[in-house]
Amino acid sequence: MSNENIMEIIKESIVKVDKDTAAQAVENALKEGFGPVEIIEKGLSPGMQKVGDLFERGELFLPQVMMAANLMTGVVNSLQEKMPEGQSAEKQSVVVIGTVEGDVHDIGKNIVKILLSVNGFEVHDVGRDALLTSFVEKAKEVGANIVASSALMTGTMEGQRELETLLRDAGIRDRVKTMVGGAPATEYWAEKIGADAYAENASEAVSKARELTAAK
Ligand code: B12
Image 1 (tube, rainbow, N blue to C red):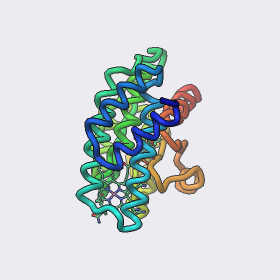
Image 2: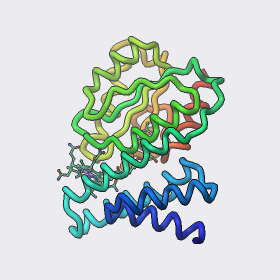
Image 3: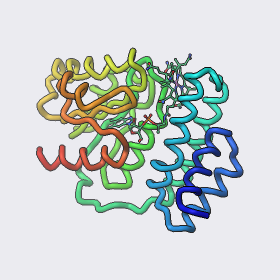
Image 4: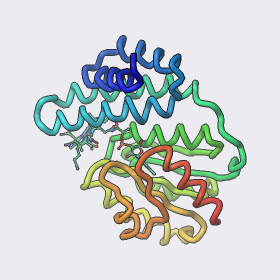
């Protein structure tokens, strides 16, 4: 089985919500030497992307999207155990993460959380559809270095901007760095709202988080 093929099988197993094939293909990929992060980024995530495209074209319906999302979550959780713990150099870096108010999409946020955790960050998750005030409260409570917010809808990304204001109003904006992500977010959006960083995917989120804390 070629390398591209195995990622394609994983991708299609998500689209078809085929649990057995997903489990088997992931096991094969691990045996072939693929890392868990690579499997997430090159197999599972493109699968979810395709699910989104089919949903948009009206070829898949919400219950199927939900089932695909549940399958992806299960596979990501099983891969988490297989991730090597990174260097503990930034153990003192504390991250508060969540999906903003009004938005229940949390698969991407959870992947970012897992990757930050295995790379030595102390991560506090305020969950999904999380009140913007809960990011602020949690950041104060745990003495966060980074506040990271996820938004998957054009209508909810405004919450990322509002969070900047709330952190300023709470008097802690100069003590924390902010990072935004989620499909509609961009580098330009981050700049526009005054966030400190944007990352396109979970591995990039780890490098950006490292840069942010090194710059502190
Ligand atoms: C799965 C899914 C769902 C699932 C969510 C399950 C869950 N637990 O998350 C369910 C079925 C519940 C769902 C519901 C809805 N959904 Co939906 N959903 C999707 C779908 C298909 C995939 C999202 C996903 O999980 N992608 C895979 C992950 C791995 O990617 P990701 O989230 O982008 O995350 C990566 C990066 O963005 C980044 N990242 C993510 N977060 C963060 C945070 C930080 C700080 C950083 C640095 C990086 C980062 O790293 C991640 C890993 O690489 C998208 C389509 C799409 N193309 O995005 C639609 C989509 C987001 N949904 C959409 C809609 C409209 C809805 C509903 C309103 C549908 C409805 N009619 O009810 C509801 C929303 C309810 C609500 N209030 O939130 C629209 C949004 C349109 C828009 N632009 O506003 C989309 C784009 C589909 C579409 N094309 O119409 N959905």
